[in-house]
Length: 256
Image (cartoon, rainbow, N blue to C red; front, top):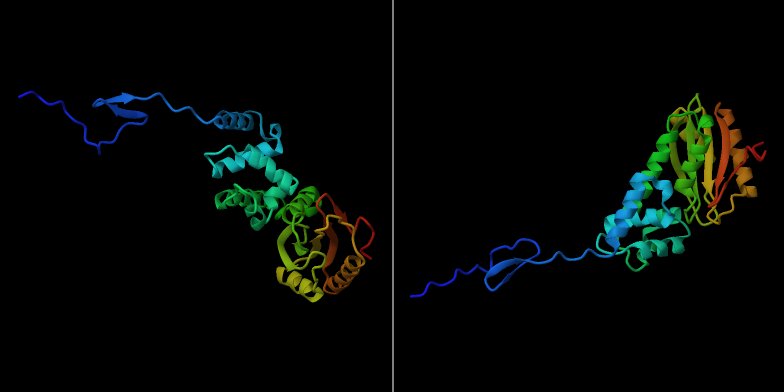
């Protein structure tokens, strides 16, 4: 009787890039990497070797998106997002519902974008928390821009300061419409007393983009200032945040 050649069970796992041919396991040539892998490697090297300043806005967004979309070239998508929302900051601050309307954006990509937004806001907030505001005014403005400038409706925030002008609390008092957020003077005073604050800064945004104060903005500022003075609390300023800039009612001489 002739000896049969050994057979390999169909269930036997094969090594990567291997096949069975004529009863023998043979090594296949490695599959070529997608064309965008080299581009991704170069982006990472540029980021780690030179620094973030060496990257264009869409390249930074690419690096964010590739964490959530590992098997696709995301360069066109990054450019499309920036064209749609105007800037890297506009993409990061965009509403998830608006992001979902673009082809190629799923929950994983949206989650990664929102993680970047949360990290940026946390970093900026920690740069001003418990520090003298007058010595970190630029950081305060950066923080306010990060949390308010891209909002589609008005948002009224209260910043509470201690006796050394350090930020001890930041809270949203009200969220309104595209051109109005109600301000409750009694609530401003009550919250300031509860925090033991000795000074307050009012902040709200103008979704239209123009930070110029309205008559109502000026009137409510003066009303809040008078109410706070009664209980010995100072109103430092009222900041209005727009997409491209800000207005300070104190700097404009509109507090009194």
